[in-house]
Amino acid sequence: MSEGTAPEAVTVMRSQDDSAKYLWRLGDGHTVESVYLALMNRGAEGPSMCISSQVGCAVCCTFCATGRDGLMRNLTVDEITGQVHPILADLDTLPSAFDVSFMGMGEPLHNLAAVMVAIEELHATYSPQCAIHFSLSTVGVARKLYELAEIDIPVSVQVSLHGPTDEIRARLVPTKTRIPIAELLAAARHYAEVKNDVVDINYLLFDGLNDTTDCAITLTELIGGDRRFRLKLSHYNPIAGSALNPTSETKKQRFQALCDDHGLSTFSWESMGRDIAGGCGQLRSADQG
Picture 1: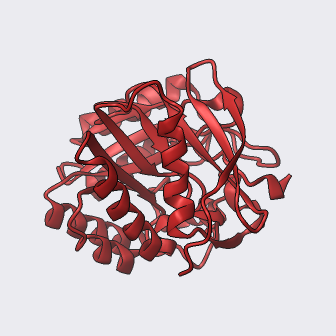
Picture 2 (picture 1 turned 180 degrees about the vertical axis):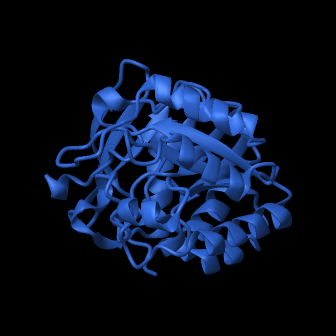
């Protein structure tokens, strides 16, 4: 795992909601994106940085722009931490608390060795001065979730489920990386128990696919009443070339009400930076055009 050089900021795009998207050029010419969220993220006490762990992604979810051309390579530790330091340096003052989220380009558990070292280095650098919190979103690599549970530094985990059945999920996560939902939730439960934490279940709502009453009921049968899980409901951010469409706000509210009524702990989330293609699922390498 070579360290390489820190990335160079090529462009910074500013959103109407005060978030900012950074395009970074790496030493070999590849590029990645990350996003600074100025407004308070759920569960965080300050701003958040959504950073990348890979150039491209091998998972190739049908709703995500990042994996359109597959995986090009993993990022090194310096390329990961090098997204955080310049963003903080751009601020007038260092925040008293902030969140570093591995929710940008790539599946972080596919590059877990570098991600773990980056977390340790960032924690050592900033924790003496401020409260730094780490979070990570994964499509679900069970054996790596068990490995992540052993790291000493707390990391909040989000699991991207998006479908209440293996059949529906296969339409959204059509890769051999996908594991059966039962196996995925078992690993997530283990993580929550070891860390004494709650795992957020990411669920993007797609019109006519996973937003039905039957889907809501099936989802509550999977995880309803289990306080180790919390359901994060989001609208899908459309990307070019996809036939998927976001559900309506009315359907989203109805879906959430059904889940709440059946004992699921839920909350609603809306991406920031969508006007600059900085929302969830919209990040791409400039290599991809």
